[in-house]
Length: 217
Image (tube, rainbow, N blue to C red):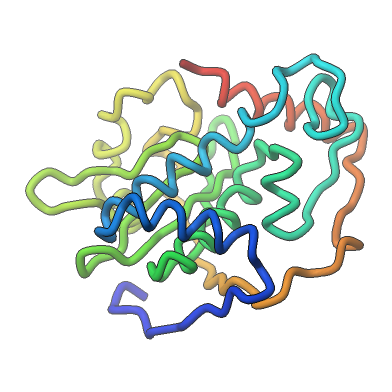
């Protein structure tokens, strides 16, 4: 799973919004490493592109998240300002692919207390590297480059020594004890709008907790 990925061209003719984002970032960051870091940063700002929590708005889902809708194409995830890790991971993976960087999603699970998370691995400088849009963090391994999920599982200190450790719940080496890697190929056509599903009242607390991560300075 950690060999060189196969070349998989992405057709973006029917995804103009995503293609424009990837092209704009790529134009400013011609080197693959720069594109990786810039797109991770761009996705980390998605939940902040809408009014502040508690405001009345139809373009974002803040406050009590009573109008939040799960799922939808990557364009919908951006438009609704989703704070949910799995949704942001889909967006980052798709944008990296459009920027000619192979990418896949990595699901994480930490115990005591239980916490689910999702990050992205992208192929850059001949190795897989973890990018976390919820923490705006790609983990550096000194003298080696950037670390993969497997590297972080074997060397959790690379996560725990990051400045956000202790402030951002997703920056925690324990999350990498259990990892599941999923190939995620951006569809050439977005799924129908019917892919959206209303959040349940019991979902609101976890959504509020997810949104609070983006309020950490």
